[in-house]
Image (cartoon, rainbow, N blue to C red):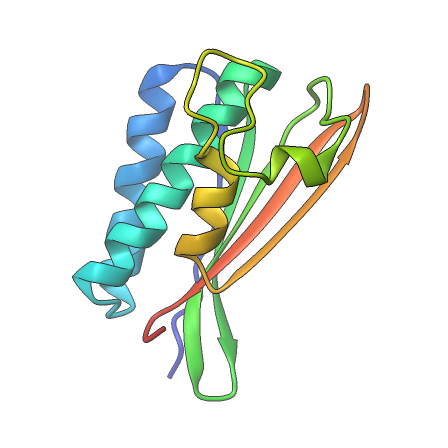
Length: 136
């Protein structure tokens, strides 16, 4: 029987990032996700949550175990009320940054997960949804 887990985590400071990564790892392990897929998911989680903290001053992460047919995985939804992203297409290009970073966070995170969606409204905030299947 599929596991039912739904959690919300606030990301307001650096230590919240550590808690979020650790909790995602625990849940991924609990559903039987392999170490390679766990690592990909945790890396993507870390990148997106860090961006949320850096550029929006924090936000919220919703974690949920998802089942579609025989597939089971973890879905994470990152929501903030920050300044938003004026040009999502540009933000999704490797090397683009508005900060002093490598500009690999969002496009790198997208490559690490099975499903990735981003919505942003300037002045209202950004929502990023990722999904990593247990065996994918």
